[in-house]
Each structure stands twice: as C-alpha cells, then as structure tokens.
Image 1 (cartoon, rainbow, N blue to C red):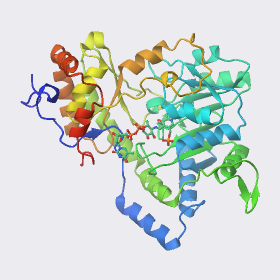
Image 2 (cartoon, rainbow, N blue to C red):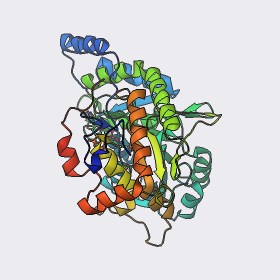
Image 3 (tube, helix red, strand yellow):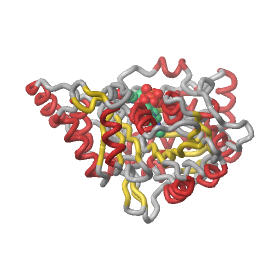
Image 4 (cartoon, protein in one colour):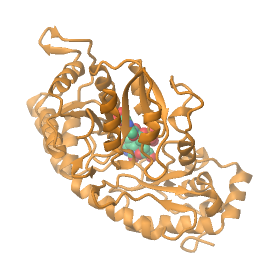
Length: 419
Ligand code: T4K
C-alpha cells in the first residue's frame, strides 16, 4: 500500500511533507496591524508596565468574555500562581491528573499540594464525582481545566465548591472563544486563567491573564503582578514581576481581532479530519459540537484503540512523524507520573481513565498553517498505516522507533511548514 503512489516513509519512502506540520504552529492574524502597533510602541517609547496596549488588551478580553476584570500577565503559569497566592490558598488543591504539567506545577510553586483526580472518559475533563470523593479537611480549592477547549462540568464543580465553601479555579488555557450555556470560557468559578502562548488560538507571543468578576481579587492580583506596588513606593504585599509587555499586547490585540476567523478555519480543518478519518476502526474522534456549546476547535483530538486499530497510538505517531506530520501525544504520561512534581495524591486513588487516555490520545496539526489539502494527505497516511498495521509494527520493533524519534526529527528542517 502506498500514499499517492509512494511507500510510507517509515517503510523507506520519502516523507510526505518536506516541511513538517506542527500542532501549535502560531496563528498570526493581520501582520500590517501588528506592525502599526509596534510602530506606535516605538514612537511612544512606552514598552511595558501597564502601557496603553496592555490596558486595551485587558479591556477587549474582558469585554469578549463578559467579565468585569482581566489582569494580563507574562504567561498563564504565573497567572495561576498569582491567583492561588491572592486567594491565600494553603494545603491541597484537587487537580485533574490529565492536563498540561503547568496546571499542577504552578500550584506546587505556591507551596500547595496537588491532589490528582481522574477525568471523564468522554470529555477528558475533571470528573466532578471523583473530585468530590477527594475532598479532605486540607482541601483549599478545586481547579477544573477546559481541556481541548471544552468547557468542563462547571455546574457540578461549582456546586461542590460552594457546598464546601472553597474557591473553584479554572484553567482556560485552551478555551478562549469556547462557551457553554451562553457563558464564555473565562466567566466560570471564582476566576479563570488564560494562556496567550504562541501555540494558543490567540497569542501574545508569551502571555496570560486572570479573568474574574471579583473586584478585590482583581486588584490584589494587579498589585502582585507588579512587585506588590499599589502606588509608587508603596507595596501592599509580597509581589513578583508577572507583567505583560506592550509588544505582547500588540500581538494579543492583533490576534484577538482575527479570533472568529481562526475558529472558522479550525472548524473547517476539524470537519476535514473527521470526514477523512471516518469509519476507521479503533479511531475515535473527539467532538464537542453540542447544542448549548460553542467550541474553538483549537485541538483536533483522536483516541487510538490499539486492539481495534491494529496499531498502538505510539506506533501510529512513529509513522506520522516519519512523514513530517508532527502529531503530539499531549499530555502523556499524565501529571501524576511526572517524577519531580510534589503531590499529596494517594497511590490508591483510581486514575485509570487518565492512564488509558494518556496511552491512546493524539492531536493532529491544525490552525491556520494547515489546510484541507494537507489534511487529506494526513488522512491518507493514517488509513494506509492502519491498513498495513503488521508491517508498521514490525518496522517500529525492528528499528526501535519511538515517537519524536531523533532520526525523524533531524530530517525535518526547522522553520516548519509555510502556507
Ligand atoms: N494550562 C494548560 C492546560 C496549558 O496547556 C498551558 C500551556 C498552561 C496552563 C500554561 O500556560 P503558559 O504559561 O504556557 O502561558 C506548549 C506550550 O509551551 C504551552 O504553552 C502549552 N500549554 C502546551 C500545551 O504546549 P510544548 O512544550 O508542547 O511546546 P513546543 O515547544 O513543543 O511547541 C509546540 C509545537 O509548536 C512544536 O511542534 C513547535 C511549534 N511552534 C511552537 C512555537 C512556540 C511553532 O511552530 N512556533 C512557535 O513559535 O508546550
């Protein structure tokens, strides 16, 4: 079996993509608008420290979400740290085991102990029932994550937090532009954090924010972000430098202006993948297109059931990487298996859904750097690989290929795929 008349790269053919396709290739937006904003920064000579573009960005983000406050930060991780600190949290925080490591490590940096909780098998978001079972006298807060841009079960989580009298924090790093029940990501719980990292649906190169309707919390975080200063020479607390720069805000504003275009582009890509990979045994596509939800389609996520597909997720990744399709296995192996992370989790807590999902899940390249023609080719690669699963499995075993194998990565020049 061949792809467009050529053998698969993992079996000795040439890669389908000489320039690799990435998960997380930045969306850029209107470059001319960005350059105008950069010119303005240079003319004003106001580069950082709560400059006019940061203030405008905060205003636009809050407006889009429908919350009273947005405090922009230099990244989402520090946003979460500031939030935990401003709330004065001490003790344990219940955290989904299946999330990017920063959700948990930000809390650990604040001296908190993450207690890892299992996820729902269908949504990959924290399982509220499992979270409720982990409450202890030391529980200071619960954090939900809108994983893959799907709003987590905030109704159930808010009820648990309210009953316990503890805050509910949300990590909305993936979810800008998504909504549930008419409420935008960013408007749930006591406060949510956002990420505007280069790989996110809208980006500020690096950037983040805390969004909330709590006036006191917002002003506390605003001070903590700037070394604790509330006025010149006067500090209110023990702050840090977590400010967003004007250059980041210039990118954030430019990116935000194109958000609806990015979502529309992602949606077309998602449909192309769904159609291209329809009816493949062992390939389950995650879709969050439900009546009361909107979804930013930031990630295209599939689960590979090795017993049905004939190939494991990791073997399929090897075949894709050989072709220059740099699909990912976010968030393998799960935070609970990250060696250096201090945790208060008991080894007896059941994290079996996290373990299964971490073993089976993969993300395909999407965003504005990828289009339907590339996706048709990727689908053909996946179909071909699965149709000759025993030969792929043998090639992986014989050559000891691993996902992200340096032998493939070295053959993909830096700089990525251009459209
Ligand atoms: N909570 C959640 C749930 C998160 O997912 C994240 C971040 C956070 C909190 C923390 O927010 P921040 O503090 O980051 O604001 C990336 C990002 O660095 C990270 O922001 C993101 N989540 C995570 C899911 O992905 P890596 O280590 O996978 O990135 P890297 O360098 O492998 O890049 C991804 C792909 O994108 C590569 O194939 C290369 C490509 N790329 C990347 C960049 C930065 C480009 O083509 N151009 C670029 O400029 O973590």
